[in-house]
Every structure is written in structure tokens, then in C-alpha cells.
Length: 227
Figure 1 (cartoon, rainbow, N blue to C red):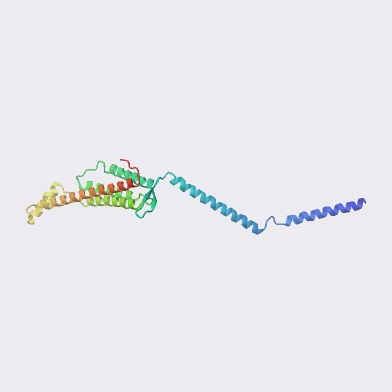
Figure 2 (figure 1 turned 120 degrees about the vertical axis):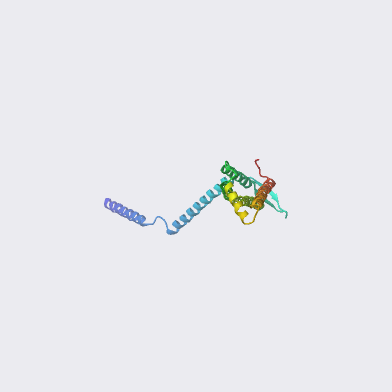
């Protein structure tokens, strides 16, 4: 009886070993289940990334103010008021930088006028870098007309009549006298400077009028303007 029991226990142990070996040979998961897990993980990762992007956009524009405007056709649109205020602020900063550059520059020599023209050219470049994409179209167009007015001013100053020294003026007058111009070119020079003064005043008026248009549109959309 003990022999039979012993044999029976050996058989049981052998069977257990065989079963363990079979279990070790079995794969832990099927290829299909692995692919499904990878797809689920990829979808989860994409959702997390999109969530981060949306959160960034909300934080970036979370403080933007908007107002509802009625169009002539009866429709209403939301206008980003903060974007308009941002343009006004950045334009003021560009103007202040131009004022600092021009401080101390006189209006006497050719070199003085060149420096003024160069400063205005820099102002125009700075203004063109201001983003108006989030602003209403009519406001953006008005602001670019204002930039064009400043560009005109730079052109007028850069193309002013030549300022001669006393010796240069005397020499030119003498040469003109030899050529039959008894005035020595005085009247011609006077007309050139009068034309320049007129062009300068027109350019100033253009800057003033275009900025008033920008401010009027800003007020129309409810933007705050600091004076």
C-alpha cells in the first residue's frame, strides 16, 4: 500500500512539473491585445497633448476683453477689444522710442535732416511689426494708413532742398549770375523751401488725421485709450 501511494505521489509530482513547463511556454499576451494597448495609449497621449494646447491658448487669451458689434446686415460679431488696446499701446511705445532718438537733433544741417528721416524710417519699421490680425479689419486698415502717413513724412524730410553753407551759397549765386540769372538763384531756392514747408505741413496733417481715425475706431469698439 505504501508502494502504491509512493507511485501515485510521484505521478502527481511529474504531472505538476509538466503542467508548470507548459505554463512557462505559454505567451503572456496575444499580439492583438498588445496592439490594442498601444493604440489606446497613443489616443490617450494625443488627448493629453491637445488638452495642454487648449489650456495654453486659454491662459494666453484668458484676459482678452471682447464686445459684441452689430453689422449693417443685422448680424453681430465679437470684437477683441484687448487686441485694439494692445495696438494703441505698442504704437505709443514706438512713438516714444522715436522721440528719444530725435531728442537733441537740430534742424539746421543736411546731416540733421538725414538723422530725422532715419529715425522716422525706424518708427515705420517698428509700427509694421505690430500685430493687427486679431483686430477688426477697418481698424487694421486705418492703422496701416497711419503708418503710411509717417512713411510720407520720412520721405518728405529725406528729400528736402539742399542746405548750403554761406560760402556754397555765394559760389552758386556767382555762377548763376555769370549764366544770366541776376537773382543768383535766390528766388528758385526760396520756392524750393516754400514747397518743402508745404509738403511738411501736409505730411503732419496726414499723421494727425489718420491717427484720429484710428482713435475713433478704437472708441467705437469700446477700447480704452490713454491720453
